[in-house]
Image (cartoon, rainbow, N blue to C red; front, side, top):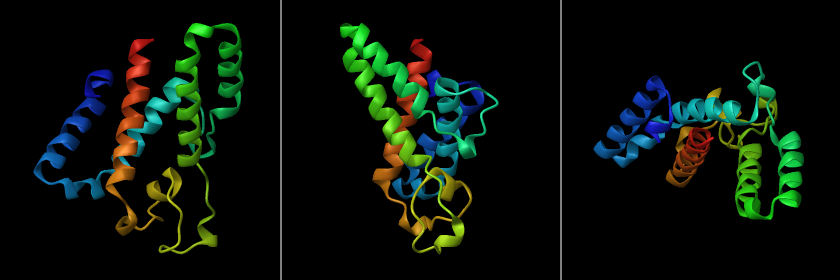
Length: 146
């Protein structure tokens, strides 16, 4: 993934790899960094640099674009279906939750709740961490391919 990013974010990815090599349990302190990188590549792929990411949902216009491409280009259908799945996962991660409606123990997992320290780190899972890694990597590589 580092090869698909700018030098600063690539350096963060190399440090993440080193920390995970030292102990897999280090993943618990890496969510915020990965969400930051995910946000950067997501805005590059689906949004504009001035997009307010706290209110960011790329799916509506992109779903229309992808559905049109599916209708007109049969050769790219599988890739467009993967892109729709990517958008579905991103929409879930970007879901906004009202902090006043939950406490730390019941707060749902999302970029918003993690970045603002409202999600209990004891509830992080390695599976969620790896989903962030794979999603971030796929978006970053797709940007490199374009």
